[in-house]
Length: 263
Image (cartoon, rainbow, N blue to C red; front, top):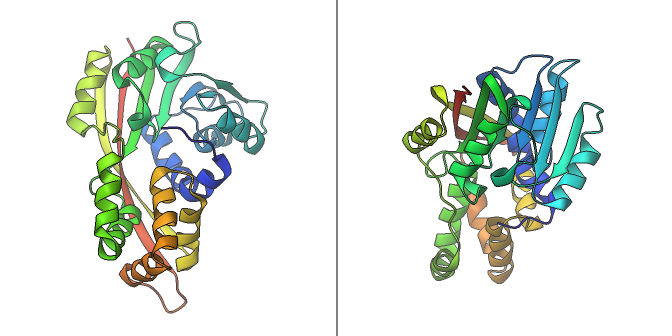
């Protein structure tokens, strides 16, 4: 998937990434003084959390999209954070260069997940952690499931056509991820489900980031809303759960996390 709008993406999904970082770093056993590799850094949410964790923690981050690397450099202006252009499948670092290698919410984007995880293992010192997490796409993202329910109510044919031609990324189960970590030679493999909640101050706070078109899903939503004369937004607003008197509401989310120890 090609992303070229980092600011719009950060507004759309970056808030979720930032909310998840604390739980993920606890799961990954981050320690102050470590040098961490952030694989597929995107807009820099994980890197920002790493350098904020302690006064001597360092992070080297890379992403294949130059626009995202440039954006991350701007939003994480810290001398202990270094950003580079590169791919997970061919990490440009020597063996055992890092204390841990982490990937936040990008597993589904790897062209070759096995090669990416084995590369992360290669550059992690013996005893270091290789960890990643991804959304539970099927059941753990109401922000999207509500959108698709509304879209199917407004224009089922358009939804069917979109899904017909959409390129679906592989989205492994926890069992498949466990097997992948084992095949890359990692030991003490552990999985965990990470839950979080996002507070929205209003429907507009939730809906307007969709209009930025930063991902195929949000671009489809924006297009369908325009085509339907605003009906998509109207129906979606009606489907929001437990909206408070001030218009605010909360949506939960669930991610799968996995880690293993490099030998």
